[in-house]
Image (cartoon, rainbow, N blue to C red; front, side, top):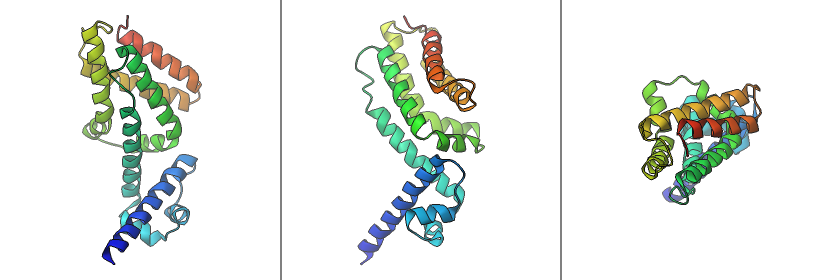
Length: 190
């Protein structure tokens, strides 16, 4: 009996997260009642799993981050040149951002400390450092600056490109092209 209740609770939690991801990506900020209805549960069930709207948003971001990291892990960072690996990483990141763009905009609007921001980006930073270091060792990328610093700049430039596209000052295709060109120049790609 307890095992079935735990399985039911997990299904409810998963349904709530599925609905929240979909609705938060759809546009106007959905109410908890709307999320509960889409998940097929009551508002009380939502609160039983997530003590606040902020806790639900954090869980949604964790889920999307886990999906994003799985997609980035599927990119073979050791195949081909470091430049090719970096471009595959950028392409995968662009697909993830396109899929969850509205949700990421909502997350970026929530104030965080510099430490929290660093922790949020750590999984991506680690992958970037790995690729950049490989490119520096192979002579593809300039080795004058540290890979960690270049990874930080890569993330910042990625955010800038996304902000330009979101603000309508560039199309998404223009922002992606500008990102690629800027990063390859920054890295001194040969």
